[in-house]
Length: 337
Image (cartoon, rainbow, N blue to C red):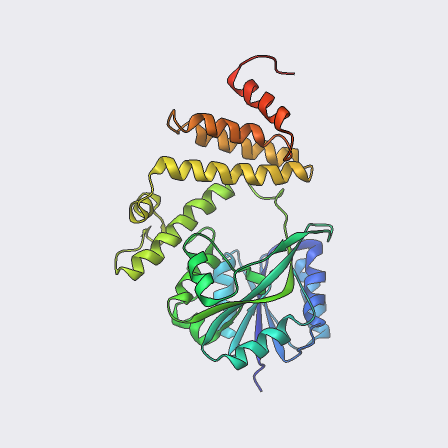
């Protein structure tokens, strides 16, 4: 018999985080599931870990691909899934024991619901709790949020396979934010919701990502938001051969390019301040370098605010005097110590 849920996972060099992720799935209170795991050409022992787990659990089905990218891997996993419900799990995240049970029950009660997420707890690489994401819950609030950002966490998502297939799955041409794009397209054809319960522990590992990634994500996210508006107005989506076209997106949204640059700069500085707070000075330094590059293209009116943002990134909140000194240093005014 087909299982009730197919859990889809694509892993590449998952390292030491894969064992806790698989253990959290095995410990679910709801056990009628299969796990389809795609090993995307890992070379760090990930293949050994999943083979060992598959030997112990016949519900695990392993496929190997040659660096297809996560979106293509998950599309393939969905194509061989047997269940009517698809649940996502990334190789670095941890599920709380009742995640599948509670979401399955909700999907059974609400047959018109095609996409269901949940609130999550944030943890670092050492399993230390960093906070939580209290995401919008209702269909109405989520649709409003989708107009400016992503209100779903991938490892907390359950979706109906028929809806996933109806919109064509993940858009594989995008270099990032494939999940955000998928949620927006699913929202065009089905009801959406988040559960109030915290059901997943989402691992935040910022230091290992390139400093350019937040910029790429901002560009792609802007195109995804503009694409949703274009579909509603029956206009052409802002993509060229499936890739993000920022100029077309900004035109659809009516946002000047300078305004976009300033918004991205502020996002970079926000990430840099988090990096400073956790002691990752090297990552913060690389983010500031990106921010300075963006500041160089701003108008004279925007420039002082941009420099103040960069100066603030050197210190935690509350150190106003030290931030002011840093701002003066950037402008070359007065003492620098």
